[in-house]
Image 1 (cartoon, rainbow, N blue to C red):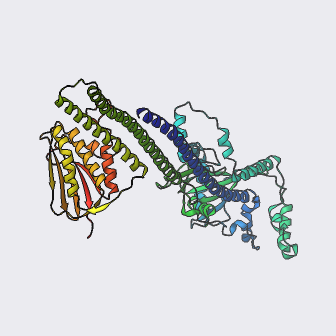
Image 2: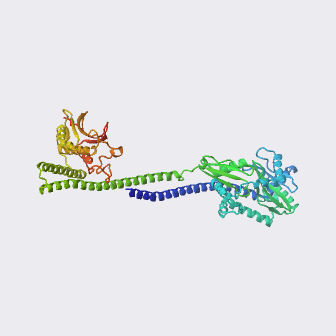
Image 3: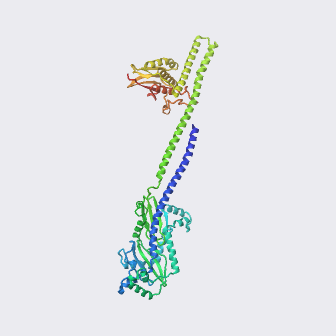
Length: 609
């Protein structure tokens, strides 16, 4: 049995270890799937933001130089109909505070009244203040997060990466993977725009005079006076050479950002651009990215720049990503906190399957262990039974043969001695007969072929008869056999031979295990309790330990080791008692009696008359 336990433990380990590795791999796969899907959602959200910013940059980069020209407004001062710049109209986006132009001589101009209620002088103060102190802003840009423009990173992954990088020398090398992650749509579009602007800046294309270009797309018959005026002014000015640099974005404080370009016209440098409200820009970007498709219920977006730090992500968010926008908005960063999205498989599903797998596997292994252990124990007990039966058969046969040979050879001349030897032969023969009968009875019970001839009646006379038959055996073993049978016992269903065999086994068992008890007395009691007749056999021996008590009726079970046992027996007596009692409709109960000793009780239900 010990070897079997060791083998079972080894098999269990061989089963559990691969299952544990499989579960671990499944959890890693689920976690990777969750991260990948949420990463894809985050990339899509940030890509929508980049797309909106790219459209803004493309529009402003391609805006003609003349749109910023204040002379369009100055025509009103010459008593002529004004030709308004499109920038004089309210901007299409609420986050645009105002447009401006800085001339080569440092003068400030704007065709647009600020939408925030600020005066033109306030706009002038903000813009001119930046260009006077612009170089000092380099420190703010240097303090920005060391994240590539146009990339999205997982905050948790980035923290782990930083911890790993702190343990090795710093390197300025950018991995190929990080470089590839920067290639989203917004970055690609803006890269094409920058390449185009740099090419135009280098090739210096010419542009028509501003007023003529403004009117060139209209029907000349609709505005002959304006066209004549434009023609006159175009003749008075030499065609200008226009060179436009790419747009540059700079954060000037916690709430505002400048987006401007440098324009070279006739070897003169101009600064043209617009002032953005970052709070309104952030609100517009949220609307652009999240929309109304339900993602907004699971996403929280916060923005930061080199001057203001990003707000911490929500504590309930399982996935947090940070995006640094591509140039010219590289000063801006967005942090996206995503709660677990519906429809994305989670670890709970794997845990449930693992629990079911472990439960089914555990129950299967337990059932297998129980079945094999019971089979092994039963086989061991049968083997012990064979050894015990062999011993029990050999002992009376040896005695019978010895006494028989002595009587045959006339070695015993005394008549009294011969009578004693005859008596020993009869006793051993009866003992041998009981043993064989027990084995045969148990075989029939085990096979289910034992047929009972039940009758209804009082068991008192059968108990008295059994006591009379057993008293000589009890006296020979030094026991007093007491009988206590109640009067007028109601009828029960039983079989006489089966009941006699039960009583023989119980009394024999009491005589074997209580031979060292005190007093040496065996009591047969038969009493009526309610609607049940209780037949009990009690001794005054040492009793049975609780560990063995619950297994007393198991076949071939013996509390003693077969190699060290002190008492004779095969382990069939009580199992046979239990089986015969069950066949008669009674139940057998074994317990340690109050005051010491062991008691077996058979409970017979009475028969309704």
